[in-house]
Image (cartoon, rainbow, N blue to C red):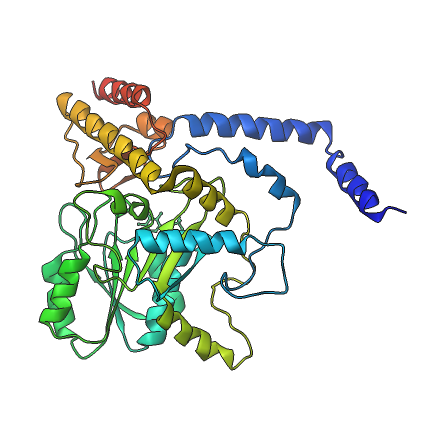
Length: 386
Ligand SMILES: *Cc1c(COP(=O)(O)O)cnc(C)c1O
């Protein structure tokens, strides 16, 4: 008996058993998704990808269980590809060449949780400082980790208020400082300046500190900007989290976290007494998303990624000029793909899936967005204003 053939027949058979009604539901969902993804402008996810070359991997239980750099008895994985993704990102973020570690996460939030977890293990008495424009998931993570924290004011553009940060740290000089920096805030894509933050810590003679960069969106943009904003390891970060489905593009949410290897091995050691080198937040990990990221990196390379971002930046400038030309009080931060303007009418928010908060709406000119879309959107916005 050919057991392999027998199993395959069973699998195929199972897949054929959807009822006609269920077949229709799947087809309907696909149509809805096509329509809904055609004209969203409000969320920072790229759509210019095609991973059909990788579709055969859907037949296998891909799982990058545990640490991407350690051997495992489980072999149905894409660990070697994941290692290349980590090395590429570490280089993009100018991590120390012989002292980095990382893994492909389920998204930016998990990478942020990881950075804070490392910080807490290094400085259990530390206080986390983060601005009030910080992503909503962060206060939950700080709560999970049971860390002390203080929220800092922001400047008008969404960047952290350096004066407020300095005064607040000064009052708590006897405690280690954990800085959670935003490299592209959710609403205005404002980037906190890591160099200025380092200067503040130096001025106050704080020696125990940790800086995490939340570069969920801008981690795939900032490395290509000129001037390059201070956000990475060389500028003073100890860990960086970036989303994979935002600026890079992926059909499944994912992300990458990069940290300093010597800090990670302290965590690994602290857990080794239970007999495990458990370095990642979850046990089972997605084996497909590292492949998607690898594919994008290999296909585009650094130069291709840079070109793609430059084109998006040019279109973002065009959008800003057009909006201002129509008398709309639009603005954007330097090097940002996010354009902010006074709250759009409900119908426009609904149609273009615009995020709106504090009387402001935004659109994000991701790499797949084209000029026709922008022109249509502006026509909608202007007409609804009349
Ligand atoms: C999107 C975003 C996050 C969360 O990232 P996910 O990939 O959705 O988990 C965190 N911080 C900022 C600034 C973001 O824009």
